[in-house]
Image (cartoon, rainbow, N blue to C red; front, side):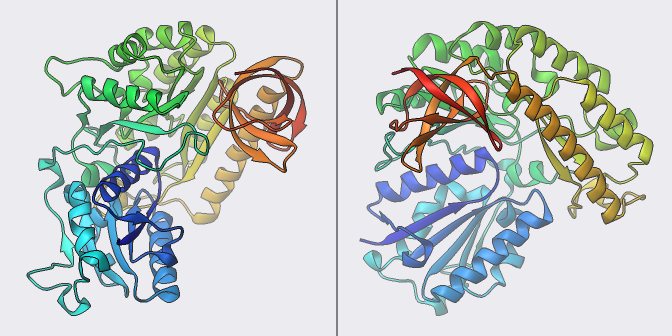
Length: 449
């Protein structure tokens, strides 16, 4: 039996892709190795959203090759689609497979294992076994989606991702992702319901719906459907206890979606709404499809409908031409709006995007200072949000044991909890919050299911 190891980098959609690859490999009779160093074939499922993401992949390749030169390294994902020859030039890489052919990964891995006879290294790169397999991503229609696979146990792992959408039709000036993921495409509704039902049957209580541009789900289907329609269908046709929405663009947080999230106890009270900038001028340069006042209206509507919800955003600092006043507009908007956490990123130039050629590149030290200011602001907001729940009850799902005496959990509204006592993972629990412990709350269970 051949052995493999899959490592995924980046977003939830990439993690779901990695799960799909694992399921394909298991279906073909391969065995999962415990570590990359123990595997005959290592599949690196990559991200390329920033230069540092690329660097993480290159460092991982070098480490694996140094520790076990006989391991066959197959690189796929977004970095592989964007710069295949760059990856293929690294020592230890046997195959590079772009997103355009990711659905064929299992067919490419099996011949590389001893169970099926190693392809000699000398043949890698020949016409019979090309080192780079890549095609037109915009002609790509496959959508991998597999949140669960043989051997995965809900008693050890909770909150699987279900990728229901891939690709993006937007053209934000800083973003390379549409060029490595292709057009927006949706998982058929019956497939979404079937996958959700399979997760329920295996004992999962909470799933995370994910995608590259999740709120666009259904726009490419015939007939067209909305993301809210899909949520209602899942709720009506499955018994999943909790649905969590990963990230939805502000213009896709419709009144219908807000009402559904607010009124259904089976939808987690959590909204992640990418912002990027609070400056109208910068948003226009980014080719974002909303203005600061549109964004603020959506956030205020979400907070009014869900007073205890977690509300988070992605924010970028250092976009080309971002002046001090632009940054101050961003800071002031964040200060005013009821965010409970932020993901703050420093702009990273991506070759092939319009912003890479824009004038006014922001000095690194200036961008870092702006990043620090927003992180400090986000930390204050998060602390205040957490503190508002001391003495109150929160519904949560248990994750892992912690030091034998406490169990880590995640609340419905996306707060990290330490629950006193030892609980099995994947249990729903009501927690009476008592205190802080760093970036987590601590409490005692008042009920457990």
